[in-house]
Image 1 (cartoon, helix red, strand yellow):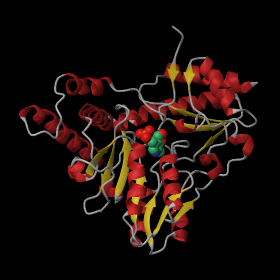
Image 2 (cartoon, rainbow, N blue to C red; image 1 turned 60 degrees about the vertical axis):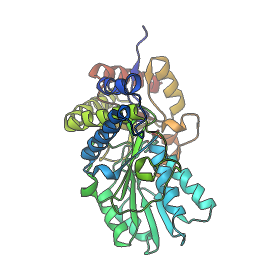
Image 3 (cartoon, protein in one colour; image 1 turned 45 degrees about the vertical axis):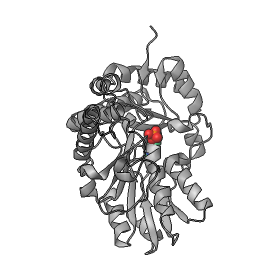
Image 4 (cartoon, helix red, strand yellow; image 1 turned 180 degrees about the horizontal axis):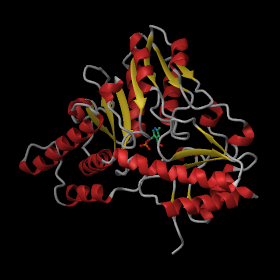
Length: 375
Ligand code: PLP
């Protein structure tokens, strides 16, 4: 069989086999509706409660602060639209110009309805500084939403500092932590955030399930009307199997979070060392504080799309930007936001390694990258 090397873990990850095993009984045997009052629903109900507690424990939250959603995009939409629609005064939202489209398009939607939004620009290294936020925030800002780590650059943001600034002006703080949860330690109470979005398929859980952390005491309106699931805030029969799989995957990743991070970082360093010693010209974007294994690499004068396709022909999956942008051949909004020079921006690819990658994968990726960018 032709080789296949998966190096696009920021787009999605392989389902962990233990998470898959944990899901099976809830699909095939204990398929009862967790909201029903009879005995057959007791198992699913208990499984939901346990999954909620496990997830809460992984991020330092209380179980009642975890709300299951269908994905990271839903969590983001809920925060941006829900909190705006509940605000009769139409106070401002502040976000950043390099958020995921789940945030940016939600912000565009509320703007069209007359809710003001301000966009902060990152530094060339992909950082939103406290100074940048302080320049724009006022006492009539309602919500500040800054992603934990950028999905194209991997750059990690100073969330605790930004959150303190938001609170000092009476604003709520949300972070889209879809890329970070399960990969670097996150404790919501230490950070002080009011809301945090997450998605299972980014940390070896199943696709189509996520959660939103909402700090106790923060009032956000119901997002999906219907039954009383998710404490009456998000209706819909619970996806028990996927929720159980999400909890199992997150617990497994969090139990080994330092070990995995060290391992993935070592693969990242190996790849960069190999590229450096090959002598090809390239630049890494995103500064020095990045998620383990996520690399935005620019090859000046080259074409990122062409690199991606030639790597693909060799059986190696990488990305040019965020997965949702893969049909768009224009320079991504993230690279524009950091002001990357056009000849670098056009030749940019994203390589994202994960816990399932090996040194052999890295050698093959490097050899092929050198080949396709060398001429
Ligand atoms: N936010 C960020 C930062 C992401 O990287 C992604 C997915 O790429 C999302 C949100 C959307 O998550 P989901 O695919 O679960 O809707």
